[in-house]
Amino acid sequence: MKRILILLVLLSTTFAQSQEKTFEKEVNKISREIDRITKSHKDSLKVKVKEINKKLDRKELTYEEAEKLKKEAAAYHANKIEVLVSAEELKLQQLVQDKTNGKIASEEDDYDTFTIGKRTFRFKMFDDDDEDNDDEEHSYKRKRRRNKRTTTQFVFALGMNNVLIDHDFGSLNNSNYKFFQSRFYELGFTWKTRLSKYPSKGYFKYGFSFLWNNLRADDNLYHVVNGDQTNLVVNPNTLSESRLRHVQMTFPMHFELDFTKNRKYSDGEIGDRTHKSFRIGLGGFFGFKLGTRQYLEYVNPQGVRIEEVQKNDFNTNTINYGLSAYVSYKGIGWYTKYDLNPLFQNTNIRNISMGLRFDIN
Image (cartoon, rainbow, N blue to C red; front, top):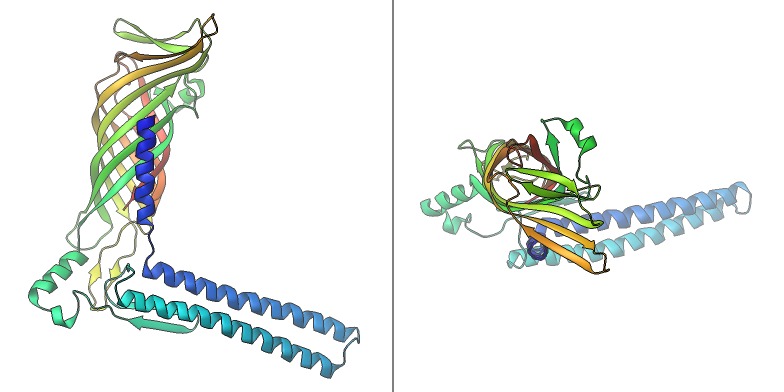
């Protein structure tokens, strides 16, 4: 578990670094703030006008007095909008200057166009696409960068782990393992290669992963090896923990459809983009077992708390293979994997996992 926590910390650090500020994100933030300011003051003005009209209807104000109050309220809120929006526009100007000076990254390589209200801003950064570098070598590098076919991702998944008997989903209702307490964790690295030479939706995703599959036995059961059989039997002690953990290294392969809209550059060239919309992955995996352990915890008759770790292969199959699929939006999705080979030798029990999957591009 300590190793899992360390890996989770490293993963969280990587994810946090991937969320660093970009020019486009900051522009969107300023745009949303301007919209909020404008809407807030317009709504406040509507409330004030409504109250003035009520007083006018009750004859607490003359028509001339009501009109004067309305104009004063309109002038007040218009001035507040002007002052606050001007402050946001100063932030925007500084942001543009920071990008020009290379102090903030951008998601785009060419012309940057963004709209705030009715205003549209457009400018170009000076990089490898500039006229001074527009020779054959830089043109080749630019096209290669834009049309990059292979990208890489860190993958992390976690969720519920259990078993099926004879491929029957109904057997989950009578499982000897706790449903929500039996969990799996997966940590890996993948490559994602576009199938066609030119931008498209089809990709081949492949890599390697380490899996921690945990099965927590219910009803005070634990695993006992009896020759070439592994059985679940009742423990004479009252167990507070009965967990079988098998660790695997697998090599997943998926055919992925990525529905992200491709990027169109100012020169008309189409560039590939990924992980910005819905994705569907279908495929499988194969791998091998790294180790199996059983963890038991109980209080013995003398009142001593016992934590027992049993190291054995428990007749689990060394080689594992199966099917897997995921449906994701951007970097997060629902993930299911199912072992086609039995978990234990000479049985019809197969491991199934369902949970969340994170692909950090």
